[in-house]
Image 1 (cartoon, rainbow, N blue to C red):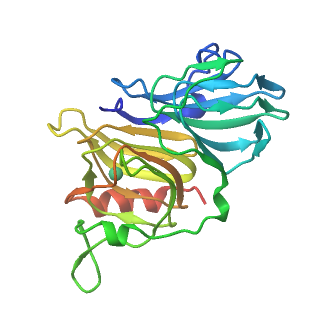
Image 2: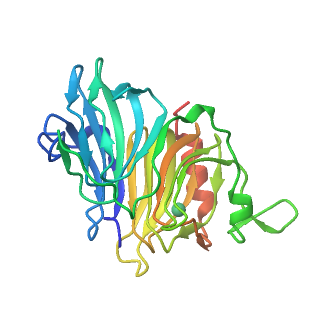
Length: 286
Ligand SMILES: [Fe+2]
């Protein structure tokens, strides 16, 4: 099941859709991407001051991350950086935002909310994750254990993963392999090769900048070059889409969705130094 390919979308200026979400018609939505077979969706809800929706349930499971502002869901308050996972069918308290919020959603199938109704929990869904303040989690460097091979060569001359990537896992589903994580790239980070994955990989740039030298399919028919992403840009990648080299000048904070545990397949890029150097020498995001 593949996500739509989205090489680079500025979500902050994409169409603001009204009446987009069944059962939550007051929500204003900027769509990121959709999975064709399951109907799973990635989108941002812009809650205007005074936004409210009655208690109910959603038939889709929801990963919810607050980008800006705050809102309450029943007795819980979610501020910037808060995350929760609500399995399909689980009862939701009333939704309310006094001063407005921008909230990122990933769903496993088409969003359909049933206000005033009681649902049955989807037995295929993962366990509920209560509201989590992501700043309280520790950064970890799981890539150094996961990645066996890359195109980067360390100072000792061995293949290695370039240092400078840290992750906070928000949700890992052992059955489906799905991973939702915050990932930070250090300022000046460079990954010189391309990688692709046998799973979907979708990224929302919460803050910072990122440069991607090439994005292309396995037949090299649809090649994008020199993509520059800034805050609120989104990438949707189905399996097999090559991407890299990657670098960032001011650092990058992503929210990442993987449809299965991370697997990276690498290819060298001959002109990576010219590409990356050209960006880092001229970009000015500091
Ligand atoms: Fe990737």
